[in-house]
Length: 476
Image 1 (cartoon, helix red, strand yellow):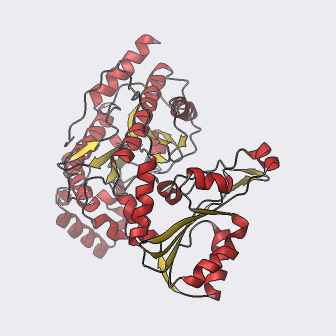
Image 2: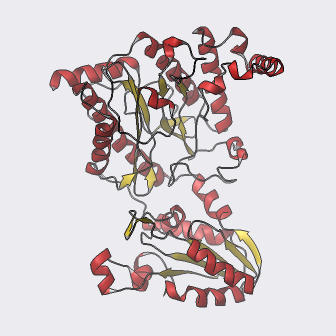
Image 3: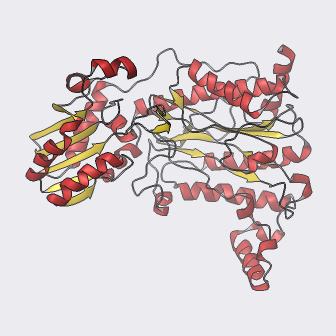
């Protein structure tokens, strides 16, 4: 199903959450484990390392969140776990887990531990040991293996132990991420349901934030809208935010990852909200930009309408075989042409070739810093993969530019999020637009014939946003 137009959302309609809460089934976890084993070489061992607890301050920790790879493979939710996949042949393989031991005293303070019995009974382990036995038992596994799979990730304590074992008994070493991350790229029906559910919760939160902003013009703050959003996430069953919430009023929207969220929201400004929740480990990611007072000014309307046009074109281009690069290029061309039409960019920048020529001329003349280009106004990509991580894994790694060139398949999930940013302090910007920052973001999943927008329940047309906020003021 291709969804390339803005859905109609009644200003008074509430987002309806599904009656049944989605979940990953036991059968799907077993299939993931079996698929992982299938891609391992014979006489090999693969280690997938869970997260450890992170110190917040003094003797308090951040809320624990398991590594996404462990969540994907068997859903084990507790700290310091290690999964060891031991494969001799296709007929001789076993999942070994290392977990924290049962400890009644510690459990009194920090909560229930599954222990080795829970690992076997509930998380598909054939064998389980306590984590203190890792070095001893892993050494035995390495001694029998000819190939080892590992990734030096964020759990530095396990990295140190593994390095000592491996240097004492070196083998052919492969990156375990090449297996598990490739599997995570294509989302199952159940995974898409989880992301859609997270998106539905986030959609309701955005609607409530718009309503509160309209009702409290003059007293509302960035922090109050953040509180509204994150209350709604928890109230509707989400376990956490998917990333640090961004609530950026006025010129703050021109800082892409602004998270201070501590300023008053001024009547007449726009506010950009980039915030979403995580459900069952699966992320959503939504950005909406709207007027604090519920009514777009002419200048705000012009920039917003252009960004929305670019987003809708990019969504329409999201279909099997597209790449993140090709979707980006569609959005860029719409923005480029629109900015020329608005008089922001010179006519020569209507095409990429023309823009490159003008930039080359400016460099030759030494006036490059004075030239306003699309890259100054739109400095990020149009999308990123999404799943168990909000900036999700890619087969070649998200830091590798080649991941933008991977042709999409049904089950790929990514964001579509063009924007334009007119820094109030940049004199190259037309005075009419200074201080305006707009981004519009939705999550899409590639289907057999096009894409489905998983976050479509949040209003984003100008008329819908203004109607929603106007109605909120009437009911206050």
